Image 1 (tube, one colour):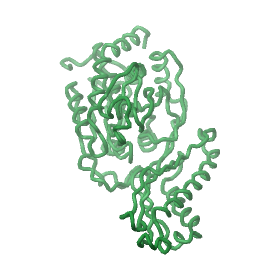
Image 2 (cartoon, one colour; image 1 turned 60 degrees about the vertical axis):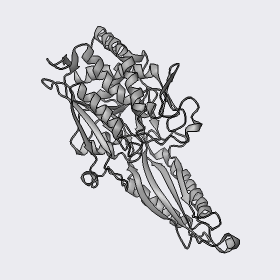
Image 3 (spheres, helix red, strand yellow; image 1 turned 90 degrees about the vertical axis):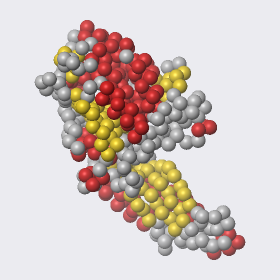
Image 4 (cartoon, helix red, strand yellow; image 1 turned 180 degrees about the vertical axis):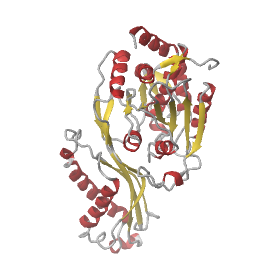
Length: 431
C-alpha cells in the first residue's frame, strides 16, 4: 500500500470519528451484563444491517458446543445469550479473509455511588477520556471494527476478501460465545480482537478456571458456638490453602516460555462469598466463587484435578475440614491459554499498520488475563491479533478509554484490513 492511500484511510477514520464515538456511547448506555446483552446486540445488528451486510443473530446452543474441547461448563440460562455476525463478501474473493471480533458482555459495575465521574452507564467525555462501564472493555473495540470498514467505504473501497464482524457474549465468564461462532462455521485466515491492551500486541495469555468451593459447617445456637463449626470461618482456611497452592504454581513459571520473567503470572481470586442463614446461628454453609489462572499448554482438566487433590491433602489434618472436606464444582471458565507464535504475516501486517497510524513500533507483551483469542489460535489454527486502545480501571470504578487511542487503533485496523484483505471498488449499489 502506498503512503498516499494510507494517509487517505487515516483521514477517512478522522472524518467518521465523531459518529464512531457517538455509537460507542450508545452501546455504553445499554447495560449489557451477563444475560442482558440482547438490547445492545440488537443495536449492533441494526447498525450492521443498515450498512448492507448479511447479518445473523443466533442464540448460543449449548448442545452444539458441549462436547467441544474448548467448552466451559455453565448452569445459567442461555436463552438470551446471542451472538451477532455480519459478513462482507467481495465480488471475487482474491484477498485473505478476516474476522473482526469483540465481546459485548460487561462485568458488574458495583455500587453506583462509588463511581466518581459519572454513573456507570451514562457515558461522559472528560478531556481525552470516555468514561463508562464497558467503554474500554470492550465496546470501543466493537465500534472500531465497524468504523474501520466504514472508513474504507467512504473512499469507495471495500475488502477484497470475506470479512466477518463478530459481536459475541460470554467472554467475561466462559468464552463460549466466540466458541459458538467457530462451531457455526465462521473461520478466516486471521482475526483481530481490539481488547484494551494499550496499543500493544498480546504475545501470550493465561488460561482461566472458575470454580465454586462449598464448605459445610455444623450449625448451633450462638450461645453454644464452641460446640459447632462455622462454615464461613472454615472457608478462610480454604482460601489460605489455595493461596499457598498458587505460590507453588507461580514457582513453575520458569518452565513456560514468555512467562518466566513475570513476577506473578498465576493469580488466584475469591470474587464472591455467600454463607450462613442467621446472625445468631453458627453458619451452616459457605460458598466461595473463585478464579485462578493456568499456563498456556496446560490442560484445564489436569489443573482442576491438582486443585482438588491439593485441598484434600492440605486440609486432611484440619480438625473440622479433615472430616468434612470442601466440595468443588466447576462452573464457568475451563479455558486454555495460548501463545501467538512470532514472525507471522498477520503480525507483520499489523506492525506496519500500527507504525503508520501511531508513528511508533509495535510492542508485544504477555498478560495473565483471559482472552477469546484462544478459540481462534488453538481450535482453528488461526493467527489472532489482540490489540486495542489505552484504557484505565477496566473491571473497576470509573472505567475509561482514551479517545485519541481509539482513533489510532481504528486507523491501524483499517490499514491492516487494506493490506491483509486487499481492496476493490465498492460494489455497485452497495451503500
